[in-house]
Length: 129
Image 1 (tube, rainbow, N blue to C red):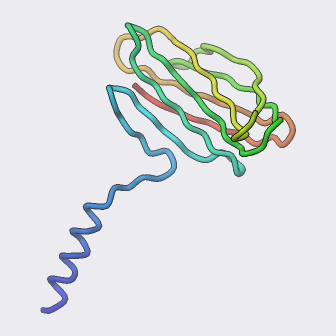
Image 2: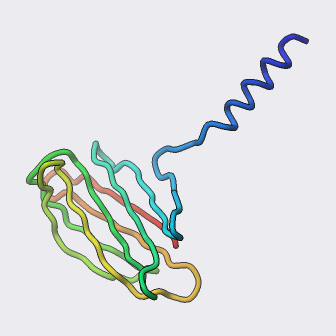
């Protein structure tokens, strides 16, 4: 019976430790932040928050390598809201895309997809607000 208090202590500690991993969502000021890994060594981060009746969406691609060209598309509720090409720059080897979109009735879903033109690495970030 001596194992029961030890097991209870382990379960209590495990419940108290927050689980933060790839794709974890954090809400603050009614906004949402998600992050994760791409198909290679690159990481992505995506934020969405209300902004004066609209929604501000920021997507970041961080490969830690300067000079990479990425083709990207931002979708809002399945429709293309913006697209373009960006190049990673110093000091961190990243780029960021920021857009303000309309605010649909109900929840809004956003998908940011970026593909490295040279390596073919793909990043897909999703957030719902």
